[in-house]
Image (cartoon, rainbow, N blue to C red; front, side):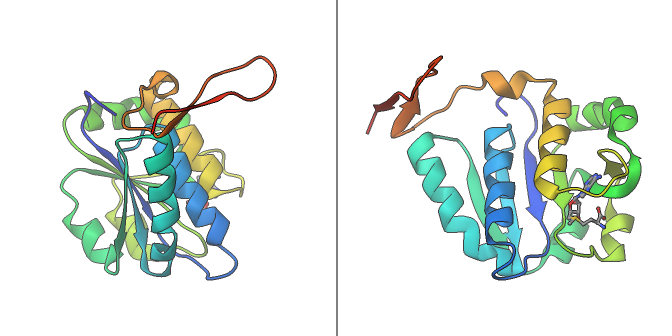
Length: 178
Ligand SMILES: C[S@@+](CC[C@H](N)C(=O)[O-])C[C@H]1O[C@@H](n2cnc3c(N)ncnc32)[C@H](O)[C@@H]1O
């Protein structure tokens, strides 16, 4: 988000057919809840256009990128790496230290699909759990980003949108800005 070092989300793993919506939703959740970019690894790259299309229509700044070399990206990351996993430490206890680290440099948030390679656990500065119960990469990413930004992402301003949703107590109102 504007005014703080960048937050990127790396989506590891993507089972073609099974994970199409999940990978898209990782990207859309990253965008909506204050990350600056999503990086989709390997087969997940197929969802980048859909995320870019939503950004064109509903605003940014946000970029959807792809990588065929996620291991190298992780190893070369010049900043903090947080891996979200049910096996990690409680997010609520570690978040103050993560926030402090993020004040001085970029943050990469890694989420998986199926089994995440052990190297990722080792490469991460923090392996963090949003409860130690199994659920979903989309849910864990949403909770993590909201905790990181302490809710400020909910008031974010959007730029260069073709359309804007005007909040209504009932019904739908969308204004065309294009
Ligand atoms: C289908 S889950 C796989 C669960 C996996 N065994 C794990 O390590 O969390 C896919 C992804 O969701 C995320 N996830 C699931 N449950 C989580 C939790 N309780 N806390 C944090 N992340 C979680 C992780 O990023 C995981 O790679």
